[in-house]
Length: 212
Image (tube, rainbow, N blue to C red; front, top):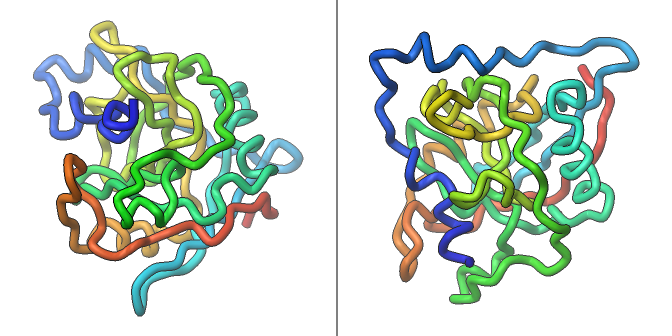
């Protein structure tokens, strides 16, 4: 199961958008920005090698993906993400984390205990640059804690008549420079795991915060 979860995006990681892209994206929508009392944001505090780190502020989308947002916030509230690493980083694609701890670098490829049951896929919004989306296996309804941040517009990950898509549940408002720094880090292969940062980049904490 660990290999499958780590490779949640393997089938689509470098997929080429179809020539019929405009047609098959008809089921996906751009993520609107809420305001006032509807706005809910989180701060992801990142740390890593010298010179790496900072805050990522992201607004969540409870109207578009209510169960996905509730699931994410449940992990935030119980401090599950504290100490989890960005274990999969692919330039020109995305950065993924939220499941493994730094023990991963000591050949312990087991996910952090305390995961909730998988949730139903709520894909529907576009996987554009800066959006947060749920990682999963080939089973559309297998997402638990892991998520990724798109660093480019990933049309191949959108819901379409040909695929279930990946559920977008938020968008970065501030801190894309931090995301880009993570994306630019040097990666290596560790055992059967590819695209692993050479040095741990981890979430010091994830907290609910006022939206900017």
